[in-house]
Length: 65
Image (cartoon, helix red, strand yellow):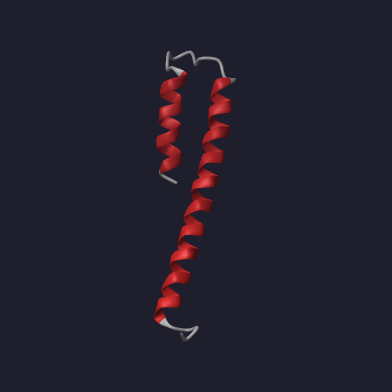
């Protein structure tokens, strides 16, 4: 089989995309873990917003990146 065939190119692109997506998810999970640690060590804010609400808002904000 020709090394430069469309099938090989397609497979290469698929693998690179999968690697990029895994890297992006791993980086996002690291950011979420850091946010969770910060929220766990932060006292409740004075405006009565719970840590769970802050975490949920943080997840929405980070997922929008």
